[in-house]
Length: 547
Image (cartoon, rainbow, N blue to C red; front, side):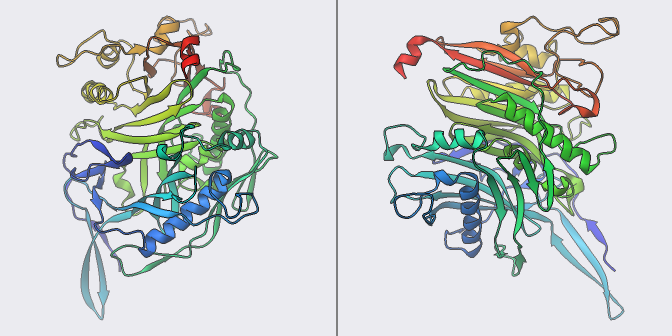
């Protein structure tokens, strides 16, 4: 007989920040938790030649060659027929996902069983998986890229949380994108190539654990030039979304388009059916592809061991499948306590057509004694190298349902943003209406704890008036609601504005337009319970000439 008991008491969760090491995204190893529910338990002494590191690197290389084959060096003259070259493995790191309920100590479970009539007990630390951080490099190849990966292991399978690439500045003076990369991006976006992601590692030895995890070949997703998505043995026709959302000046050549969307995790239909989620993921993926944004930020992105059906548990890959040629970073904010026998994590993501040269994040304030502040929240930041403008700082967050937590979090985020000079965009589901203290603080209207923002603008209000929330008596039943409301798309009409884009722009950059990413559907046919936002930024002629 097996009995599972969790031997750790609930308590307040610690909060700490994040740093970068040599430009590599990382959390501060001195902090107690890596993110909500997971201790900061990096394994010491990890080396490139370790068996599991070698196998994860092989998986990452295969992923890169399937997703971006033109960006991986080959033998010979680099022609498509050559073999892919083996990379060097740089800066390998390994985070054991020690689950914690009190933010200080690992949670334990007891196995109680009988043997020869005697009751025996074994106590174990709860480990939800292992997350690997590594860089693949080809230093002997001129003008080659480095590929950075975060790969997580769960139940014998590997999943990609990050795939970014860029050119080391010392190798070339011609920019950060390898010649030919733009052509590849254009080809795959037009459907001229297929992108297949496979998992093909035979076994992994998990650090200190003295056993191997068998790992069978399993195709995750393939998008073909015929517009079909194939996952495992199931083929699903990709839906074509009618472009009912606003989008101005599509052909603007010297502009930057940045979008934000709360993707409503794995929800799908009133009963949460997997089939309904798969259909919604297809629909939302097509909405993201159709908007043709250069940079997309997502909230409520999940890894859920028991959801996703044929698409698998790693939700970020469900959407990046529709965005071939884009780099991406997914950072969990919270591991859910109910997942101690499985694994459920939720966080934020940044997807970019242009190089993500570095990224980091901070843990936001949390009061675990507040029933509305159950989830750990983060602010994820990326430095993205864009044409014309250079580095743009992109911040994405999903704020707490608790008003006191939101008020403290926006001050943290503002102070975080102040560390980085230059153009910046802050986006996300802020769970706050425009008259709240948190939003008025970000707008520069109200102080919190004697802190006041400067130079940060609410992008919607730069172009349009504040929309009226759908409260009793504001609208007639069938009256058209004001443009700018972003929630709740499950209802017949949108009700309030809680999704925002705040910008800090230099004098030679302007906001050309901001619009809703709205598929026009309501109820469970909608792409999400939120509608998205997209801002288009344009540059003066003087800036274009200098670039």
